Image: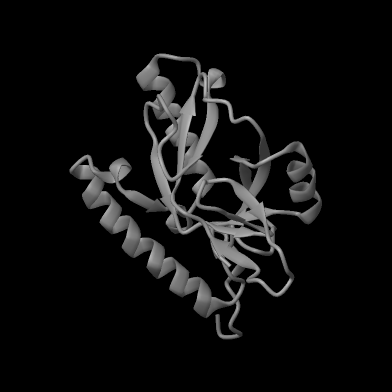
Length: 189
């Protein structure tokens, strides 16, 4: 810690900066948020509120726990559930939708019709804030006409992959363009 680095035995608790000060700031932010979430969970309000998934120590674990809870509530096998993603409103028929906020989209943006669009010029911002994104596990998620699998990472280094989010886009040509452009979603810069 004296050299400004995160001690190696602390590494792995969550994916953060290798520098001690940003790591500790992130730890404090997450701990404070979790205390607030605990109060909400006691009142059964947690899953009804907007969650900043970047505040979880292990975001992937939260998404898997949501899958397990959904399987339990539906009395369905865990393997029969697929992740449904919807922008601006919960997926139709979703039993336990959760609203995520604070996600950042690189290489594209979400337009007012909730479709992913390519950025037009290279001088546009590298990261675009996404509108609320609703996630839910469903046995038969509503199918989008055309969608592209966009990888979700913890940050822009792309060291820690979480999972793919299927986002709607306008055409198969657009799908190929987004894949070639390396469109990605991040929890934090």
